[in-house]
Length: 397
Ligand SMILES: Nc1ncnc2c1ncn2[C@@H]1O[C@H](COP(=O)(O)OP(=O)(O)O)[C@@H](O)[C@H]1O
Ligand SMILES: [Mg+2]
Image 1 (cartoon, protein in one colour):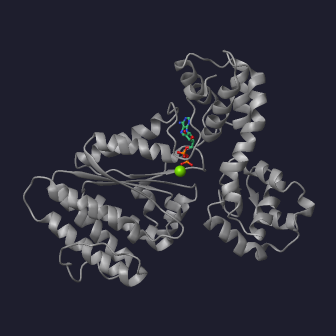
Image 2: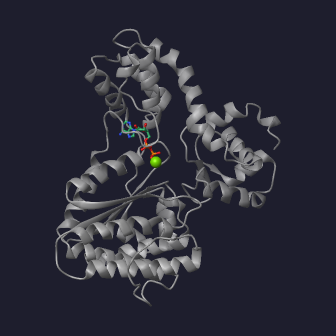
Image 3: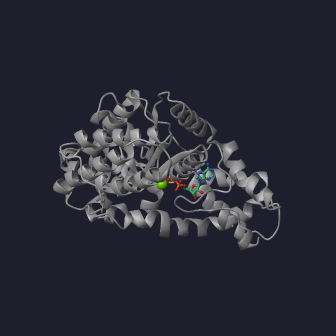
């Protein structure tokens, strides 16, 4: 089929031709946004799921919903090597200047800027990487202690009060939340706690790996009362079929039943893989309906592309000992495994694996779905590891 008309869109954050199976999460977001605008409190949302399930796409969709219902939005993405303060400060500055341009009396916006200015001087002392011009005097002694758990709640309240005074509301969208350290996550939770207690118009919608509820709970035990953690996962078969068939039919093409069944078998309903199989299959097909042999013919190309892009970028960031650990996990199969079994596969003592396991968790490669168990954060990564290092016995374990 004509590649120019190919409706499928594999890629990080690429909007799918149809956002299938996510109505419950979007409805939850709609309620959160509506209630907060009406001055009623509601739990913030932290979407959790593996890589490639569509969290970023959902955050972007919720950002659109928020802006359509009158919110001012801030979008940021956390990184392993970037602190929360410097990440948020530039967007908050821009937002406050925007609020300043809105009509309305009162001094809360100026105060917000002054508090932001003090906050920046506080983080400058602790992380020394922020330099943002603000032509306003800091409010000394407020939000400038350098202790994020003290300063961030004060800053959030000042910003939210500024928005309230200008009859506006703020939606803060944060991707890859699991990369914040414990102190930062604790500060974020405390800040949202204060905002919600005062029913101020600021909502947080975040997304991250499935370790997020655990991290938040460890940081602050009351996190579960403040946040809801909707899981985002693979699509059920009917939804997966719809994600392929509807966009194809909109372009005058269809998949036959066996072709859809084969794609589901290969992808297990994971959104990223559905887009990738849909995309390659479309390009190979010469007529409609697309039959199963076209799918099987495309599989080789799909796997090569996944290996080169989706999997390889993650693999290349690993040290040799991390690769060995993951290869041993892959040898045990796709599900989650007890650390003891991984150690046994590698013929080493369990406690010697602690540091490498911690680094892999930090890099977002594995997570602990249950106590003492480890699983891959990237679907089908076990198969990739077996392709990347075919012979386990010579992987140097
Ligand atoms: N509900 C959905 N139905 C079909 N495809 C989807 C859906 N959500 C996301 N995708 C596709 O999945 C891929 C990964 O989405 P992304 O939001 O980057 O995932 P994540 O942020 O969880 O890693 C993209 O190619 C996107 O088009
Ligand atoms: Mg993402």
